[in-house]
Structure formats: structure tokens, C-alpha cells
View (cartoon, rainbow, N blue to C red):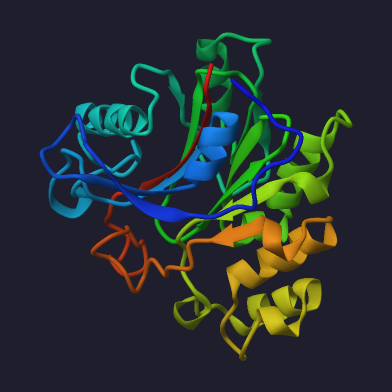
Amino acid sequence: MSTTAGLPLPRLSRGRFASTASQEPLYAYTDEALFARTGVRVAFSERSGGVSTGAFGSLNLGSHVGDDLAAVEANRAALASALGFAGAPVVVPKQVHGDRLVAIDGTRTVEEVRADVAQGADGLIVRTPGVAGLLCYADCTPVIVVAPTGAAAVVHAGWRGVAAHIAVSALSALCADGAARPGDCNVYIGPYIHAECFEVSAELRDAFARDFGEDCAPDARHVDMGACLRRDLGEAGVAPERIADVDVCTVCTTERFYSYRASSGTCGRHGAFAALSR
């Protein structure tokens, strides 16, 4: 793994990759300049290029939704291979809508980390080269934070995670040893349910307006998760130009992404992937 004293400004572009699981291509948003300079791979997958069928078609990465587990494993392996990490172990937590972060830092074996995150976690701090962190989504907000040290964090920011400031906690974890500063880190936001589709109770809307500002809650029943995250991370020291957003609503783009709301709860999961080259 190579590192750099300064990361390139973040930029997400949609790429087409060959899939080992399917003749159908696999698509993902990546930052190729970051990968070329630092060896840090960040990606947000779409739903094509896998072997799952029906409501889970086709690159379902979630093992908890009722899909065939062999298909899920094949899909995860296909994603890792497409992104340049063929054969790499992939750590996937049991997501519980909390704010717990678990480190992959070489102090434990991969199997020990997997046993830990199976108890529940909504974020991974990836410091070990050659081991991938993967979290799964179907409307909640995927967030990846990359430090100039070469470490990365992947978090699951549902509304509970946003309210618990999980993205800022991940940023703080990457900077805890003093080797990086928040202002030097890149933040990547994947596809998520946008404000126009995210109707919530009036009480929840008001709570977000109090905590994150009225501009994060555009009317009486809707909340903008992206705006909340940008406000939270900005107050933690991340400059606006260091935040890249795919800016796609999952509810409005179900041909490319899974949406729990749009599918009435029966669907697969796309993913946020981070890994460091050896």
C-alpha cells in the first residue's frame, strides 16, 4: 500500500467492470485518482453483475434478506475481484442501526474480527492492507472516509446513525493517533434516499431540524440525510470540496439500486466497499 502526504480532491465516477459471477457487467462508483495515487479503493456498487434472482437480482450483497447464501458469497467475491481485490477476505458486519465501529488493524485475525462484527456494528475502520470492508444498504446512506495515512472507514448512516453522528465518529477514529487531520481527509457519500422521498414523522423531522439546522429538514415531514451529514462533517473540520456525493436517490433509481421503501421491504442490498492495496 502506498500513502501520500495529500489526497487528491475526491471525485466519484461510474465505472463498468467485468464480473466473475455473471456475463452482465458490474457497475460501481469509484475514485480512480485516489486508487492510482494511494492504493486505497473506495466503491459504491450498483445492483447489476451478480447471480441473485427475483427481488434480489442481481448483485445482492446482503446475507440477511432471504437470498441464497451461495449467491451472496459469489456476488461479494465478484465485487472484490472487479475492484482489484480478487481472493481478498471481505468483512461484512451485522448492521444494527447503531454507532459501533470495529477496527481491522492487524491486531486480530480476520476470523476474530468477523466473529466480533457478527455481534453488531455499523462501521469498519480499515487499516490492514489486503482485507476489504463491506457494508450493505437499500436506502440508508453509505459513507466512506479516507485519511491521507491510507486508512479508511466505511459506515452505515441510517437516520439513527446520522443522529448518533457515526460519520464524525469514524472521522475522529481515523485521526485519533494524530497522524491525520479532519481537514485532510476525503469523504465519499453513496446513493441514498433523498429528501423528497424520505417522509418521516413530524417529531423526527423536528428533532433533525434542531440538531442539524432547518435547511436539513426542508418541510414539515421530510429530512435531507445528505445535508445532515455534510453539516455534521463540516462542523468536524471537513471542507466542502473534500466531500464527494454520488447524488442519486435510491427510491427513484430502482433499476440501478435497491430501495427498501420502493420495494415494500423485499429487496437485495448494494454496498460500500473499501480496501487498501498491499
